[in-house]
Image 1 (cartoon, rainbow, N blue to C red):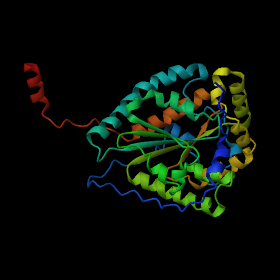
Image 2 (cartoon, rainbow, N blue to C red; image 1 turned 90 degrees about the horizontal axis):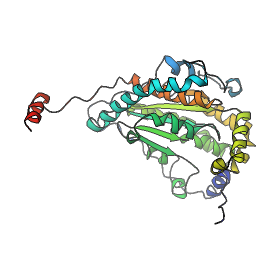
Image 3 (tube, one colour; image 1 turned 120 degrees about the vertical axis):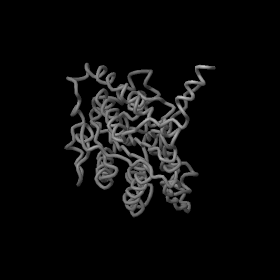
Image 4 (cartoon, rainbow, N blue to C red; image 1 turned 180 degrees about the horizontal axis):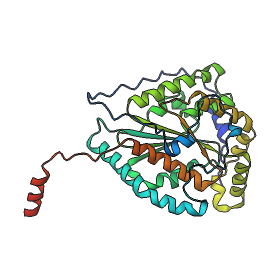
Length: 325
C-alpha cells in the first residue's frame, strides 16, 4: 500500500484560511452558577515556579538559555530517574485529591489547565508522555490544536478553546492553544494584522475569566534552540521508527525561524500577566524539560491546599453495618 504523503502544517493552514466567513462572537463564560465560591486559582511565588517565571517586560528569547538546568535538585541526567521517582507519590496523591473534589464537590472544585507551547521538536508530546504520565489518566483531559477546521473558522478564535476546558477536578493539557492565533496566523499572514493584533488583549481577558472560574493556568513555553531542533529533525530521518514524526512542512516553518521567534517574543511579553504568567522551560535537555513541567504542576497543585472531601454519611454507623454484613 503506497505511503500517504503528509500535508505540511503551514500549507494546510493557508488552504483553510482562504474562506473568509462571518465569525460568530464567542460567548463569555458565565460566573459559577453556584452561590458557593470556587477555590481560587494559584500562582506559586517560590520553588521552581519562581525560577522559571518570565519577568515582566519585553522578551529577548536569544538571552534565554535552552540548556539550563536551573532548580534541578540532582547533579544531572543520571539523577533524573530517582528525582522523578521521588515526586511521583506526591504528584499522584495531590492529583487524586483534585479528582475527588471534582467528583464529590463539583460546584467548588478547582481545575488546572496546563498549556504547552513551543516550536516543532520542542517536546510537547514528550512532556505529555513523561510528566503527565505520572498522574491518573482518568483525571486528565488532553487536547491538541492544529489548523482550524471549516467549522472552527465559522466561529470566534476562542470558541474551540472554550469547548475543551477541563471539567471540575480535572487537569486539562493543551498541546498548542489559543496562542496559535497570534503565532502561526501572524507569521503565515493568514489574517490581517489588525485582527491578530487585537487578540493579545482578548487572550488576557479570557485567561482572567478562567482565573475567576477557579481554573489555575500554567503556561509553559518549551524553549528549544535552532541547533537542537535540527539535530532532532535529523534523527527522525535516520531512524525508521521516527519517520512517522517527521513532517516535511516543518522545514518551511524552520525557514521562518526568526519570524517565529519574534512572534513568540511578542506573545510571551504581551500575555505575561500576574494571574497567568509564562514559564520558560529550557527544552534542549529532554530529561530536564520533563522534570521541570512535572515539578511546576506539582507546585501549583500543592498550592491549592486540596483536602479530601468529607463523608456525607455517618462513618461509624457504616462501620457497624459493614461488620454485621
